[in-house]
Length: 117
Image (cartoon, rainbow, N blue to C red; front, side):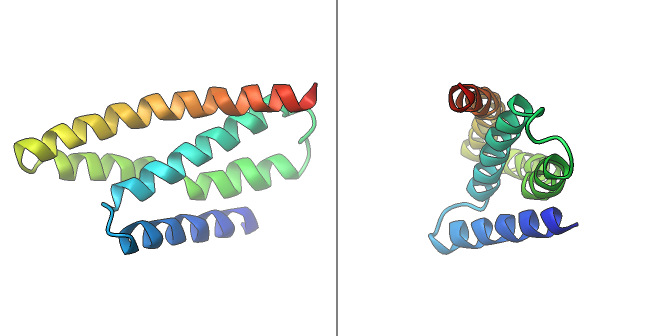
């Protein structure tokens, strides 16, 4: 519960900062999903070290509330229903999220491997 509350708060703040900077709100979702994927990749690589309460606190709680598939899917559908340019933006957002998410996950695992020796 504590991890979830912290993750939800961070997600909300990233969204407010993104919109406050005049950027589309989907960039906030993109950012938190990339950060969450990196952190989950890192945690997956060091799972034996984070056994016990730390893994559920950070992975399930914090990352679970930080990242969001439902908002991502909603934003893609909303963009796709707009102009031709918005449809291209939706396609790029969907493909970019998948590509960056997988790359972020792998990066987290590599960083954990480098740090653990």
